[in-house]
Length: 308
Length: 308
Image 1 (cartoon, rainbow over the protein chains, first blue to last red):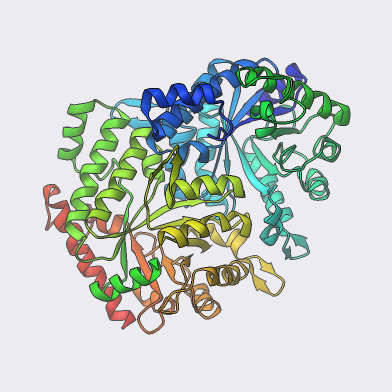
Image 2 (image 1 turned 180 degrees about the vertical axis):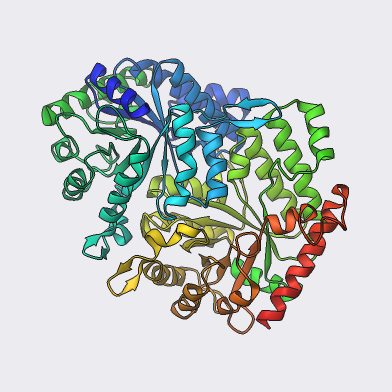
């Protein structure tokens, strides 16, 4: 079961950190962009090529320190077909390095459409007698707004191919409360969604007490995270919002139970560390991978100080 | 303003129908699949190739009868990069034929990520001094669960490039009520979302009284649609669920005001008409385009009987 494997990798690395692979042209180093533009001109293909080069260096620099990476598909999808190919190649490279891959795709649609997303991302596409694995993420994120029949189509592939889900419950953005914090029948909407996710998870139980259907719970809302931790004792949390979005390690302890139960994402704080304090004067542009590695080590120390 | 243009095309075609371009290997005719598999083997590329051939025939058969088409990205995304290229080529072909294109992508994410989706789908991707239009849909569908700061990043591109949005309010699937019908402070959640969408639409006013931010309102829930029509007088409705999902023309009248205010989607009912009653004995596989054309004419008559 994939959540068991994630937990085992967190225990082994002693590090509940997932590195968000959300490359942007603004912080991919000039020497990488120059090489790609020389090959492909000022095109989306050049941008995708530079993203893949960038991601490989980041993965090489951190794969032994973290259990997982989380590419955000939007950064690739915006480039069209060559971007999607880069997303797929990034997943493949990360898996070859032994990393668990969480595809941050936040899809949500009616059953027949969800089946297509499910087969493409975490299942197989059957053509004639051949079955093709297209994306191959280990986990994907999904949106709960359409209800259970938009989630169920993923369960079969989760069981058959040892995959998992993280469902949006309480997101990290400033306006997340506009709907998620609405009072509904004596509870907040995010608590209602949280209890549904806890229940849906019974379909994929795990040996460490956490199901294969996790929850996205933003680090920027510690009080809500604390309530959700109690409401969802068997649900693993994927926690965005640490660092760049303002979430602090002190606030994250509430997401954990006995040092387990959550994995904390950092994207720009790690992959663009060479552009930020305290790394930018210590690492040159060419050393962006080393800066990312140091940022992972610093984040690990910061988390362990508060969690253990 | 794009909703104005959509309304003008609906008036011109006298047909508030959008054709859902959701191809599936199960109903793409054998002679098309055979040709693609001969070229590319049993591969995702063959499937994407057959989808594009199929879509072009459908578009050629209906472009003069309908204002718009709505490709569902999941059917293409599941095939990886070649599927995304097919999605893009389908959009391009439909626009060349003068159709308005609604990209059914249902994205929803935090601001920085929404900006990437927005620039890719309805804006421009700037690389060096060049600005690339990647997908080029006229409208896209989005998910409201993250709140206003997940919607706002689309507004700038909507204004700059004359684009529009349809926000999920009340979806057509059987379990849509699980969250959307929850009682929240004296109203249902979908009504709360509806009032937000009506308010968000003030950012993009239109000359016919409908804003550039429409709402997805399922045909399978006529009572809810009636309430939403009153609650959202300036919001154009995109209505899925007619036909295959069980929505009837009689139930759709509530979505309209003075014969305007909504566009009704049909996907399989039109594009797979040659496999279904009453068309399957009248049209051969090779005539699947003619069957789709007749299905559009029949749907138009069915809608006009109830709406006018």
